[in-house]
Image (cartoon, rainbow, N blue to C red; front, side):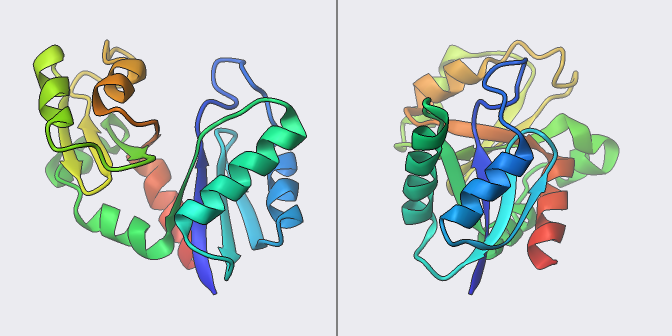
Length: 180
């Protein structure tokens, strides 16, 4: 059996689309997923499954969520091994040592086309640094996330894919839960 994490986009943020983590846990269990645990109120669910890979699980969770809550959200699913690889290839290791909360990973629904990152970087000249590693966009916020003028909508539009961000501390906590 493989350990996975589902990362929900756009729930419990800014008072919009409130969904309890208990209900998300129940939704995963109703799909036959095992060892389900949640982390913080922003839509992180760790589970075990032998029912296919991340793409299939993502589609199943999104559909079940839409049926249960009557609105749609994107769900990105990663395996425990993928989370380990993401942590290992973080291009901002030095920044993490200084301010882990200023580094985030944008988990993308699909890998952007090769020219998409160039288009994005040409359209935004803020202080943030971005690096695409595989299917994840690493972002370093040198002035902090709360002060950033980098909108997620711009990133998604330019990269032509949906994504959901987690700060570095959350990524590390999810890794611990996956190893659990």
